[in-house]
Image (cartoon, rainbow, N blue to C red; front, side):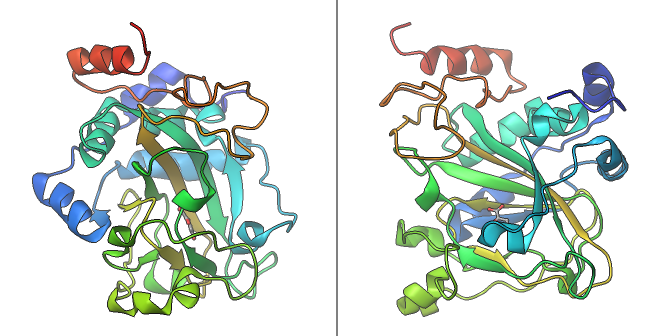
Length: 287
Ligand SMILES: O=C(O)CCC(=O)C(=O)O
């Protein structure tokens, strides 16, 4: 896929700022399974990404599964936008996600630009059913998280993510988001000890991060503007591929019980070059 023509990779890297997360934020993530990161990415980069959408391939608006009903997607956004790549493979982002994944080197599992259209508008989307991300994955461990970045303002009524607080402590709770009424907390009513987080209004560049074991979802968008968001999922680079069927790994020829050593799952640079070299060595068994 071509890189969108508005920025060269060098221009994109030069203009993008990602701030380091704090110790307090790391602790909050581990305690609650999610954390809000105000002003993670600079707002100019976010505004440029919103503008750049016109150069990207149109999202597939056909409704073929429950995800399509909840938001439209431009998948693999880091391969389509130099700016998105600069954000998600920024060395400070690498440091941040590594800190949240036991200080391990990390890889990108997927990146996505999503739009939830307002209820009542043409192509309106519905709620995002509550689910965990891990249950779908062909990974042998759950050291995985998603960074969810507002590119344009997301008010409380526009469907910001909500989390079942501390639900990451409850293990893998199975698949949902597959058929009506299968939301995680409906399948597991005993989760009622996990409170639902309040609605977080977000400015461009604000982000949330949630663990792949944290139950999360969103309402429909009852605002007037589209909810425009960019997300990436990261996982510990020593994770092994299980071979379970999965759209993003099927047919790639990856070896079962080996790391995800494939260009579709790039290693995330870190600002510390020594750490980066060690990271690369550790993900290549036998070296
Ligand atoms: O954006 C949404 O409504 C849901 C996104 C989600 O489930 C995720 O990023 O893991």
